[in-house]
Length: 510
Image (cartoon, rainbow, N blue to C red; front, top):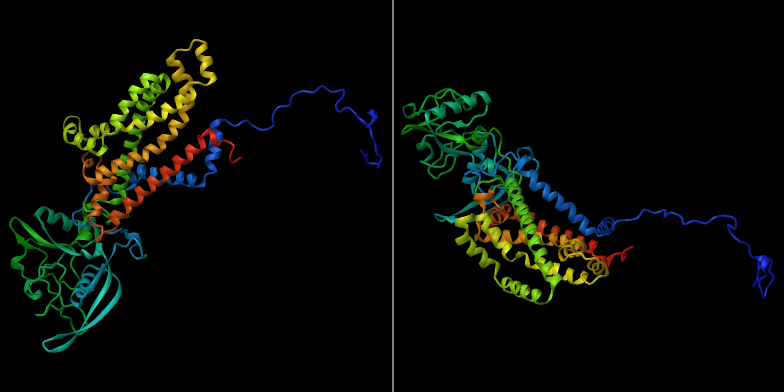
């Protein structure tokens, strides 16, 4: 050995050694780091799974949406409008912002159609034409001559495009509407049109004169020539409210009907009169004229609550059933296992259909649907619990408790079951999306109709949107996006919890 002075020793002399802390008492020192509980350790590993963390945040957002969207929406699930059916998303605040403007494409609009669109904007002050997308010019032979025809592809605001409609009022309603116009300054009632000047057109949006070919007549300035009626003999009732520009008091604003009056009204403004606000549908409407923003929240709320109840019931039944199987084993396990084999062979769709046809008449639609899930839904949980009991029942701590005289019940639910509860609970996070998926499938197919109880469901919204997938894709898109995110995030979240609470992965990433 060589020391620091480059002296080599064959044997190290005793004086080269010195005692450390010779005259001090040595004691065990307290650990400087804090001990981590099993739950804290699991959460630490869960946070390392980035996809599961992101999924959990999205899941929280979706759950909060389901809770609060129906509350903050200005519409109720029962609020439906027969005019605004399958209308695109719209908000008056963003009407000129390029989005949420109720836009829908209209192809091949000829000059006559463009006159109607433009005339509507002139009369009501709400121009439905957002922009012209494309112009097509073709030449066709007409009476031996080449005639140039121009068509336009345009984008229109569907809420403005509804424009003017015919509507019948009784005399009290007519008077109340005039009073509201005077108070609000918003015109709803527009002058009646002389049918002869419009070639007896039944389109209420045509308020200008047409020639024999159906083209709009215009003055030298290119303005429309009004075709308003001045026939006071056919007036339905006196009009004492807002008038259109240029009216000297001679225009007629209603037509007499049997016990009522018929008017030309701007439906957009009439909607404000009825509801107290402008139409605002952030996700559009469906085939029922229902606000999708509110409807998706109501449907998701029911799906989540129903899935949690089903999962809780199935977990309870499955845990008890599987505990008995795994603890006793032998003939008891064999008998109970054969029962689950029989039940697991029963198709869920068949059970649900039979329950809805027969049991729902006695107990109701929702309880019978719940029974269909409970009949076989606990089998997977029972199998999982059984495996956990087989895993732990031969452990030393169980044998020690049995030696001390613990009863079977105490051994099962005080010693073995608590060790298996982590795996069982995390499995519920994977069961919930399965229940939601099955519930949505049954309501989508029309096997179960929960609308009378829940108002609507995601499956019902998907079914309604499917019928108008080409003309109103938003009615199918938004429920699909919500359901897809819910399924993906629940599965990622459940997988993350399963890996975090799995003891075999403990320390792998540390």
